[in-house]
Length: 93
Image (cartoon, rainbow, N blue to C red; front, top):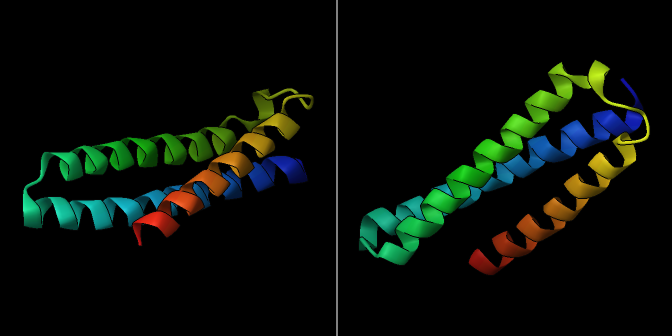
């Protein structure tokens, strides 16, 4: 496993943790206010949590099947997603 692939796995694991934090905040708001918008945000954050956790697991367990040329792009996508989720978390909190 290359260093960039390890970085991509770490980035998606961090993204999953941040989406879990967002799901907690949105879920707490949704269950206390019963607002449909907050319920939608809660569901959206849960789906993104599943996506990020699944991506990290797939990168870890299927790393032998990835071409070396694709690994830098996988790390870049994880980095871009991390910046986006950090901005969303900053706005939310």
